[in-house]
Image 1 (cartoon, rainbow, N blue to C red):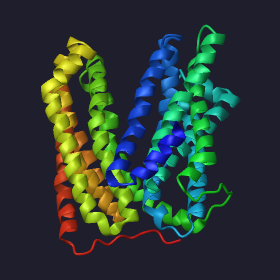
Image 2: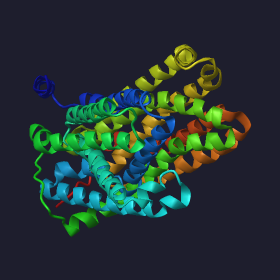
Image 3: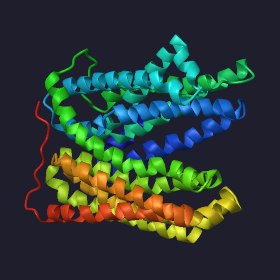
Image 4: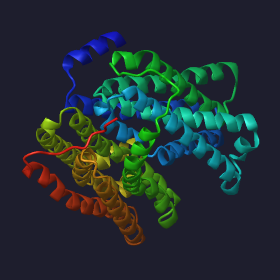
Amino acid sequence: MISHFYAVYRQSGKSLFSNAVFIALAGIIPALLGYLYWAFAARFTTPDEIGVASALLSAATFITLIFGLDLGTILIRELPQSQDPTKLLNTCLFLRSGLAVLGAVLFLLILTLWTNRLSFIAENFLLGLGFVFSSIIFSINELVSHIFVAYRSAAFATIRNTYVAVIRFVPVVLGVILSAKLTGVDLYAAIIFGAIVGLIITFRRQFHRANIPFELQVRMDIHDIRRVASISLLNFVGAIALQAPVSLMPLMILNIVGSEESGVGYIVMTIATLSILCTEAIARSLFSEGTHEPELIKSNLKKSLISGTAISLIMFLGSLWVGDFVLRVSFGKVYAERGTQLLTLLILAALPIAIIQNNLAMLRLQNRMRTVAIIGLTVGVVSLIAMYFLMHRHGLTGGGIGFLIGNSVGAILSLPGIMSIFRASHVPTNPYQS
């Protein structure tokens, strides 16, 4: 069945929209399977153990985010034009692994300072070593998805991520058969197992099927490291700043509004993220297409803006029409009464986010990373300040308004850059030269 899917995918061609669909599915399908994984696991363990597993997973994800330097985005830009992609890929894989080790070790050193519940990981040498190893696996796992996007083969990322999400069920089911209860470490280890199997499939089969020129070699090029690091740092600053409002909103709601409202806000944000994910997937596909066919940048940018805007408007109108009903039926009356306005505002914010992400794609293609950082920092700072003050006055709704304000400011800053692309007779790009 998988072989048939590969054949159909090759025949369908690789385009802006086909890759955008698969980029979105690469996030949506694992999210849905992840929900089923935790729902299944919750029947055979305690909430405390679920908390341990989710905390370990969050820690590994955080290490990947902070110490990964957003190298995946840089690879999307640099790989297609590299004269020695195998060398560049190996350099980035080993650099990513080294950074993951550094992040995991630092995490373990400060672990006992802020949480006693996970201190057993740092106190046990084998568990600590296992956590460092898992951080490497998660970091490489995230990087691999970007490699597929770089070569306009996002369908392979969707298949791989589905493999990873499904395979994690195997050790959990075996654990249920052999033992009455599962620990948090068991659940976390099952997730690592799925990621390892996914990487083995990727390196042994999928890279070859996707025609990605890669051979695992122990080689790192200092020139590549300096080049990638210089580009990646400012891009990383912008990316982290853009993610900060979404990442910190649950904590802000908890501290300002209360724990019950925080639960409502988390559910609403999870639903709204689907709309934002779709617009970001189209922009990421635009970025990839621009590295392969720079002569089509203008037409692809127009398609990306129109489709992203259309999806955002449809989702916004849908939230006005059935948002209350969906929350009421799925989660209950309290969620509908307290979260509907926040849901509508967060989905509406997908409109300016579409403009921002398309502009960032163009800036990255032109190697204007300083501007990427400025726009990202502006959106992040304005959003957080507006969310903070408006939450004190209007609760959850205030948080949604603040988020919308920050991204609207970013869209206004992005519009001149987008218009200049359409006015230019030629859009310059600055590809990697090895």
